[in-house]
Amino acid sequence: MPEWYGPYGGAYVPETLVPALEELATAWTEARRDPGFRREFQRLAHDWGGRPTPLYFAENLSRELGGAQVYLKREDLLHGGAHKFNNALGQGLLARRLGKTRLIAETGAGQHGVATAMVGAKLSLETIVYMGTVDMERQKPNVLRMRLLGATVRPVDQGTRTLKDAINEALRDWITNVRSTHYLLGSAVGPHPFPSMVADFQSVIGREILRQSRALWGGPPDVTIACVGGGSNAIGTFHPLLRTRTQLVGVEAGGDGRRGSLGAASLGRGRPGVLHGMRTYLLQDREGQILPTESVAPGLDYAGVGPEHARLHDSGRVRYTTASDREALRAFHRLARTEGILPALESSHAVAEAIRLAPTLPKTQRIVVTLSGRGDKDLEEVERRGVPR
Image (cartoon, rainbow, N blue to C red; front, side, top):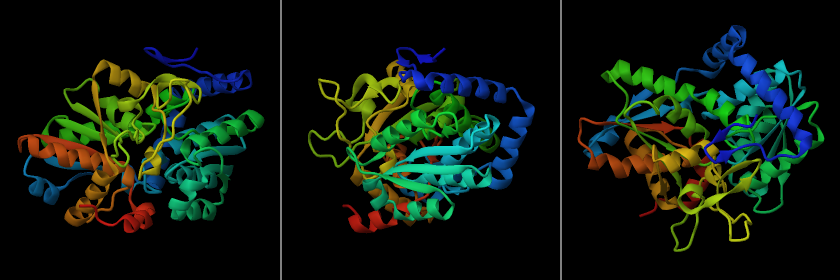
């Protein structure tokens, strides 16, 4: 049965996909209980992926901000340069367990596409990645990486030519080739079981934060911040912390900050509707048509959000806010200058919130920011835009 997060979630899909989703849900449930599956996942995550990732004290940035101490959860140091590795590895192993011979994926920033291409190469599975042509232009290094790893990158030139349209094309492919193909969906979105399954694979982030923070200072963080597009790095960060006293903050893309601009802030500026097989918050007009989104960070440039985030928003357990393009770019440059770290523009939105929040809190408090990816892929865009005032 489809899983619901209050009124959100479900599985709004064509009948063709129902057996595949049921098969996937059963395989995932069985794999979670299989010690052999868990051992292989953990072995590859450690030996091939580089887990655990460090919890790093940003001493210079903290001193400059003059308030709470800022720590970075370094998912940017994972193999492939982003948290996307965690979910891609888990789903890739599930696909092999199901006897699938072909992986398909969507990507916006390219990091999920790279992670899928790595897993496809490792597990000897044919790999096809759908990517909007706008994103291909601004993420050229990741397009090259995917191709070097043996994946076929299929340009999507319909609609806004960004992440939403890449998902549409991947779903069409899956409907056509469902028997041989696993759709390795990259975020905590889509029909059940994808939101729950992705959250499960990504929860390694939050579990490590808890373990590392307890070792460093004896308890959970006071505040934890993560960027939110579809929401996979954020839900993986938040899940293990939901029962602690930690304040949780999700940061959506505010766009260029012009009056009337929606950016890509589905929770802040949207309302409930159905997209890509789920009911969640969407940016849509009165007739239910999906509105264009815009963000300097292609991985956040999505008109919806994972259904579990929708429930956490309504309950108030997580505070969701926005950072503008300008704020994210300034955060990128500030972290580079103070700590010698180039964050992905997606992650820079979370860093921007930490920069806003830290000076308002006492020095005895600790903020953890999930640095979901590294910024190599964004260097051309950062150079083109310059340092905002």
